[in-house]
Length: 137
Image (cartoon, rainbow, N blue to C red):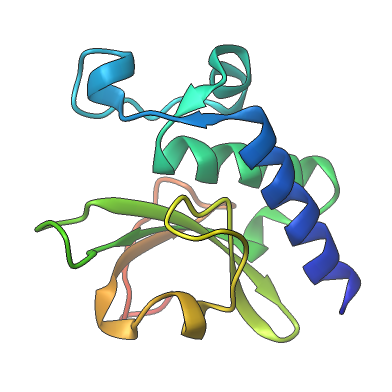
């Protein structure tokens, strides 16, 4: 196992140990609230995007470049629209998930999600620029 994959597994475990999953509607009384990593750490509660943002922050704290991290919106089969967010990390072996609340741990993207489920992404060195999955940057 590469050092990058070991780091992703470690940060994924830290996120799972630090945060209890809870939907925003139950925690904050609103449909969506994208918390900062610091807010999530303080509250110890969050949903999928909060796990992803928290994990991204921890990876950057350990030297992973923001350009290797992608917040990604996914259309899952249980709802319509962009109803799930996952962090993808670029490694030498391809993209891997980290802090994904729909799995038990990090997975290569090709094992975690079908390409048809992927909708939009933002690379974290340009977090305001969102791209369609098939359009690239």
